[in-house]
Image (tube, rainbow, N blue to C red; front, side, top):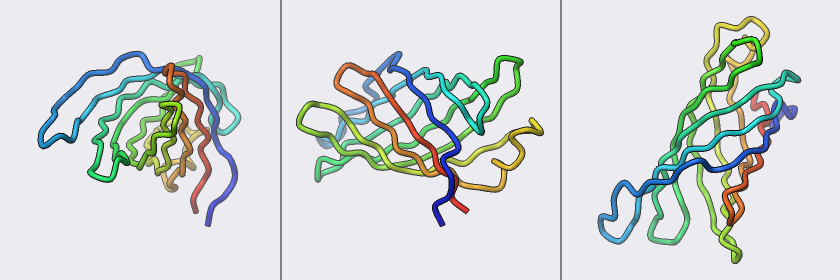
Length: 134
């Protein structure tokens, strides 16, 4: 069941690299940085994901990253999702994140999936919301 909103962030793309163009389906690597909150705690998020444009024009992506608090606690994440381009060149992603941490205030994340909405506009500005999935 989709649960509470557990995180929100805003950021931007910091790098893009083409990995392959096999069969006319480009694979790209995108890195980003963002700032926001996770379980009400201020965090910075750094991540990289690989995406492939599929035959129908949608995207499939997988990524990983680390969320860090101001005092050095970390939460790592792995995720995957699907994306769709809109007419303006923006991409809307939907998918799931899986967390790992030893930080006690984030311990509940070890046993859940986070369902995300991630929007990247045509200029590389990004916003995200993460919901708990129990």
